[in-house]
Image: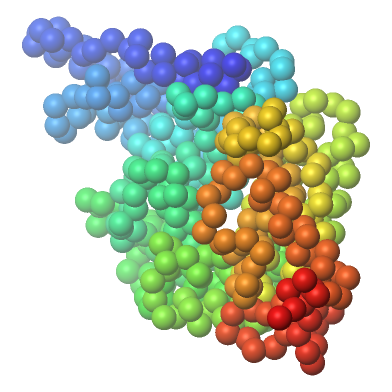
Length: 458
């Protein structure tokens, strides 16, 4: 597998590095020469050898006794170069292009430099505002060239956003605590918490410092005491949505929808927010979306537009990029709609139940053959599967299937009860209710009386 070759190359780049000299005299000679080499490399052209020093010296196999003079000298030398963050930005852009080409079937160019995990590993050692700024930008980059290639249980390349999350956590920024990177769920929560923190740093309303360093910074450099922003009392991230709710027209439609939806999903997540303020903001975002934005129709149209573009694309490498873009839109749209109980949501999700595009057909249709796992390993899930999952999470009273049913049910057992239920609703033979709301609805809105199929009549 091409992605496994990627994974193996990263592992081997770490394994092949030699350990430090064990003989004291040899060690002193090595250390002296290393410090001289680093001290003489202070021009932009020296960035590549300097980053190689950081990469090598951060390894446990080459960990010096404290205070780790060679490691620290290498980090300080990189940070001292005025365009050090741009070097990493360009290197990441180049690697992303190479990986999309690899995932599309093209061979990797020889001598193409550090791969993404290595680049982010180096940045996680560099305590500079410029690196924090670049890593903060990367938190928004959820592209993964390998998302639609076959997987195995050995490992899998991550998105830039997850690599940036790990690097920021490794920088030990004071005041950002309780971050766990164990398990996919914790990594996603960590990513969102860093994104919320960075948004306020970028806006200039929050400063930061590194553990063990009393100096405070913003993204432009060190701050004097009189330049410090006022202390923020709300949890990191809530201020942005409070401001948006006060002036929603400050953002264009697409940007506003992305921001409102993002806030809606995060403020209900107790792993990200724990305060009563978050619940109040969540209700405000929900009210704005339901009353003013038409979220169901908006996401239906966006998904259709992206799908048509992907289906019309003939270039395999470009098609991989567009498939990954659709997956990210699905991951935004369907979880958002699951939090918006209204007839339009039921109507749009119900129509998507019949959208099987990109479905991987079961090898044994009447058996439990782990179709969900096959989708996860081999390709993108169809809109029908996402719609089923969103309907399960809507607070519908008396849904047609047990909300606690196993996630890996065969495809037909997942979808058919919901499809039959929706066709009855669409035909006017059935109404529905939401938990906590006494009204009955059809797909157009509230109705005076409940409707049930004759077969269910008492």
